[in-house]
Length: 294
Length: 314
Image (tube, rainbow over all chains, first blue to last red; front, side, top):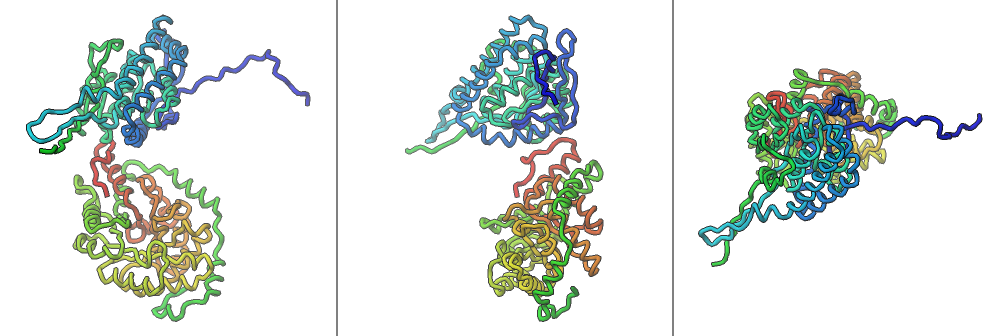
């Protein structure tokens, strides 16, 4: 048989990405096998994203729970290094993020680039807070007795995060980074209409020394994923940033298991300096009394 | 092999046992794995799942076999076996509590009047390496203290070297020492190497008078793998067909999730038959499994996923 050689004349078939979920450090398809079409701001079809089911949410919570002791046990300094590494990895994919963001929001390229920069800087911002928040939120308490009395913040546990619907990258990073920075593990439901930057971010997280299961990213219908997460007894806190009109019902469901709930702030400006506003809600304060010599 | 009261004196010769056991048809290992994997894909949902979970709870032999066991831990386990989910009175009790022989007295005291059995491991558990006199003394002591079930281990060294008569005699002797207590014979399938050996050990134990055959001690991995349970379920079905005597099966070790437990129940139904879907003939030896069963029950009841913070540890 005569050998056929590729001479460059045939059209190449493009290798297109399958947009999958990110659970426990792996990229599975949805357990349900479903996906849904994602359109750009102009209504053009961009891709099909995985449509997570409540069982995927359950699996993500199990993965987050498993990862929690290891991640919470890291030194704050080390968590800071890992978050900085996420920023480094995002920097290397600037063009991809800018393109996906521009497609999702219809923003001009320059505007999108600026938002990517802000998102990368936000990782660095929270990388800095990892070993400093304890000094601000904890400290030595003056007590009337022969005791050394100290308070120190500790991570709450597994946090379910509903990412903002209309800020698919900066908003996404702004809710995820503060949760994982302090040693919590996260199950994040991405923006329903613009999930592709979240999938790209998951690929960054997977290559950033962040242990598998510390951040889990689900794409799909918020109204389907949020209720089981809010009612799940093994979820310790809930960030309702992207809950929209579901917020009241979700807060009620979360009350059954006494979860910490961060309500959505309608006036939030994602580009503004967040301070400790998103760190403090997902911390518990441990206070230790220790007798001192008379 | 019909049993008589004087079986010990008339123990079959090694040659006869060997002819019988090696005359059993060989196990198709690949086929057994495929069959077990196929049965594991059955979907059990809603009302069937609720029934399966409750049945699984009733089949649990709640087990603690650690060197660090204390009377307090056994009492806590007994309380859990009586009423696994204090929030839900509809949750049934476990089948039995399984402890080391020196803690039988504590367990009997804690379970009095509850209907929950007390099982004791005996005969130099888990290795089975001790003189016969020591094994019998261990058994008699546990029975005297009130154990209703004895979990003995076979001498795997003797079995693997082909000394079937020794294994047979030991089981027969322990069975006599048990008196009225039920005898479960642990084959420790993780050390038997092949499924052919699992089939032979099953028939050997059943012929020597076992009331139950049990996969493992829980101290050796792999333990109760699906193909092993499948072969043992086939053996009890075959033994009933051949002799009319019904022997139970107890997988133990490695069954940690409700899903694993339900898969085992599907195998029982499909391989042995519905007769064995009864705590009198099928038990699951486990410790962490019970909490997962309770969490699944709670999920069915409330619709919300349950968390381990809401259930007792051990």
